[in-house]
Image 1 (cartoon, rainbow over the protein chains, first blue to last red):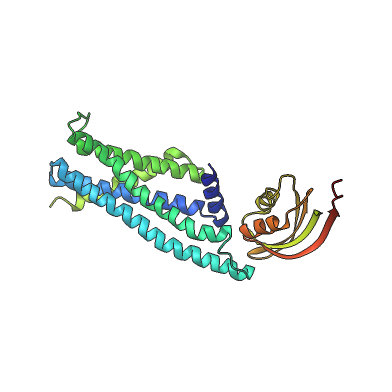
Image 2 (cartoon, helix red, strand yellow; image 1 turned 120 degrees about the vertical axis):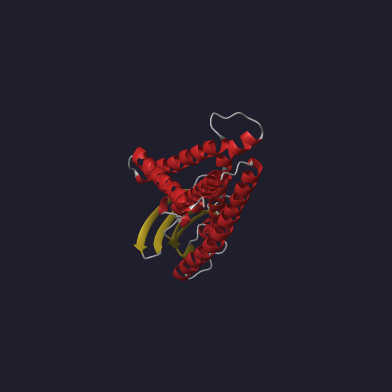
Length: 194
Length: 89
C-alpha cells in the first residue's frame, strides 16, 4: 500500500498520469491492430496450422512488448532528466535526493512497463482462442474467427475507455474505434491475399 | 534542555507537490506538529512559502529533511520560539 501511495505521489508531482494512460491506449491499440493484421493475413492466405499461427503471433507480441518497454524507457528517461534539470535551474539546487529526483529515476521505468505491457497483454488475450483451440477445446467459432472477435471486442473496449476519459458517449467512442478496426480489416482484404 | 516550540521558515519549493501535500508531509515529521503555510510568491516553476511549525518539541533536522525530500529549499529561519525545560528534581 505504501509503495502504491508513493507511486501515485511520484506520478502526481511529475504530472505523468495522463502520459501513462496515453501510452497504454496507443500501444494497446497498436498491439490489437497488429494481431488483427496477422490473423486476417493468415485467414486470407488460408493457413490453418494453429501452432504456426500462435508462434508467429507470440513472436510479434513479444517484439511489441520489448519495443514498447525499451522505446518508452529511453524517451521518458530523457524527458524526465530534462524536466529535472529545468527544475533544478529554477530552484538553484540539486534535487537528486528529493522526491523529484526519485521520480526522474522511477517514473520512466513505470511508464516503460505500461507501454510494453499494453500491447503484450492485448496480444495474449487475442491469442487465447487460438491457444484454446490448439489445446483441443471446442469453440463456438473457428479459432481464427474467434480471435478476430476477441480483437474487435478489445478495440471496442479501448474506445469505451477513451470515451470515459473524454467524458463523451462510451458507445459512440467504442463504435468509432471499432470502425477503425473494420477499416483496417477492409484494407487487409483489399491488398492481401495475392 | 531547550525545547523548540515554534518556527517560522522561508522556503522555496517547486509547484509540485502542492502546498497541502507539502504541509502534510511537514506535519508528519512529528507527532503533534501544527503547520500553517502561506504562499508568498508564485513564479513560473517555483513558489515561496512562509511555513509556521508549532509543536511541543520540534525536531528542526527532521523538518529540514522533510523540506528537502519534497524538493524544497530552506532559505531562512525567520522566527524561533524556544523554551527551557525545568530540570527534573
